[in-house]
Image (cartoon, rainbow over all chains, first blue to last red; front, side, top):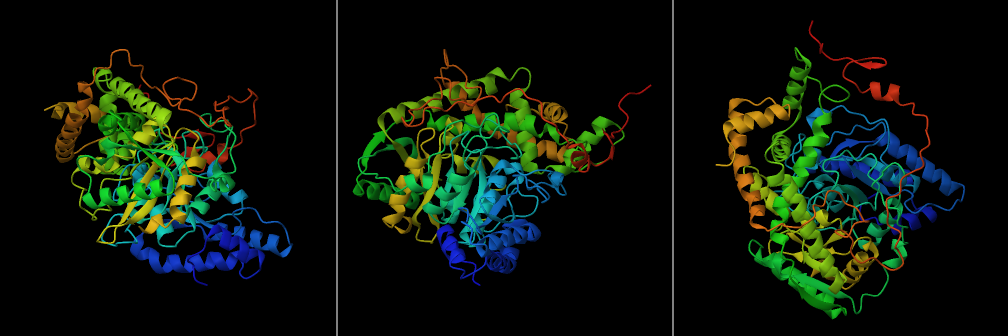
Amino acid sequence: MSAAPWTIAGIHAALQAKKVSAREIASGFYAEIDRRNPELNAYLTLSHERAYSQADRVDAAVARGEKLPSLAGVPVAIKDVISTSGIRTTCGSKILESYIPPYDATAVARLENAGAVILGKTNCDEFAMGSSNENSAYGAVRNPVALDRVPGGSSGGSAAAVAAGLAVVALGTDTGGSIRQPAACCGIPGLMPTYGRVSRYGLIAFASSLDRIGPFAANIADTAAVMAVIAGHDENDSTSAAASVPPYDVEIEGPIRGLRIGVPEEYFGEGIDSEVKEKVLTAIALMEKLGCHRIPLKMPHTEYAIATYYIIATAEASSNLARYDGVRYGLRVPGATLLDMYRKTRERGFGPEVKRRLMLGTYVLSSGYYDAYYLRAQKVRSLIARDFSAAFQKVDAILTPTAPTPAFRLGEKTSDPLQMYLADIYTVTGDLAGIPGISIPCGKTKAQLPVGLQILGPHFSESRILQLALAFEKAGGFGI
Amino acid sequence: MTISRDDVSRVAELAYLELTPDEAEMYRGQLDEILNYVGKLQQLDLTNVVPMTQMSFATGETVSPLPASNQEVGTPLRDDIVHPCTVANAVLSQAPDAIKPFFRVPKVIER
């Protein structure tokens, strides 16, 4: 049984026609994972027992002739910052090396209730802090498209797993670009939903005003099918929105003719790779050919987004990660006093990027610096959000590159944290404004590296974003 | 230079991190570069700009036009009803050192 290329619709049809069982699909994927993962390092933990018992439940439902739920038998991978009951969840950190959550994240429970088969947990930058997956305490992930390159980050394992056919869909998280940028690097779609659209109950927090859960898939129909399952209010997450969930899988077929697409000049300036620029402009021209109206935009606060983001995200992280102190879970390094134990535990348990961000976040919140950094960043965040509000008075969606360059080489940016941060220059804006965005493939460079097109929309406009993405996919845009 | 060795030591102390002298010097250089970069926010005139303290769809700062079909976008509070919570055993089973129903830590009070 070959693992790839399955789609959700293909699995549904094959199960119903009894051409294959859910157990056979799962074992096919595990065989492929055994073959490829030693090289890719996309998975950190495999959950065979849970996967096969779920597959058997699906097969029993097939045998009884029941109507199958939408994701029945679909093999999924879960980023290792999302809690899974009984399955080790490390956050890519030594400090949680043997942590086993006592409950499931809502997104995971919803996937499983819809019949999905959880294959395992995917590698990521430690506590989702990184743009290359090289900050994982369990080693870097290789990009399946080009093995000497990074898969992007922080959800690099999830993106690599889907791109390599080691899962049909995967969950990732996006705080500054961590779904869209790896999707671009690996050449697959990756959607960051509106803030509040998908429950974060069970997501281990990095920066709470930014963190979101969203799907990776190989195509837009599958992306929409996963969104239809994981979106919606959850009383266990007080930041989850009450807004009703539209039938994404139906609405994506809607027309795009006449939609106004904004192209902000600030996303095509200094620092962009010339081939990336050319591919994205070609993609925008294709959208025009499909009936969209191109409207030039100015978004003047874009250049302040990275600075704003790294102040706000690190400040929130310094508070959220205070919980790792060796008392309640995870690593404990003994110390003579309580404080000594805290310090030794955190010194040994956290990697260099996490320490760097905790110090930056602590600094910008500390007495004497709060107004100059943190308060100022919150104000600039308002201006960035206002740029988007103003733009969405004039346009229905905004098209930009996802990242300024294609996937870079392993080790290329590890010694220069600031250069690494700039990999998120086109994605952090959407996080700061709370709006949804998707990265979809729009061809490859001469070196055969994927390029990502980013589509941003107003709050709760996932259907429209997916409509544009689907029309682009159908027109052959992924391969231009 | 924006951040000194002493600043790094003070911040590490506040963040409960124990740095070696080499680490402290490495972080000082890196944090200095990052702080100089984020210092570009000082260029902006922010008079009368309201800080965005959290993502909320009820404030004017964050709202963007919504599809007419979907205006109900608040984040409702749940009813104030007590539910039983019987997770103590599961939680304590993950503790590095527990004597039910307590987490055990080094002595805090000297006498």
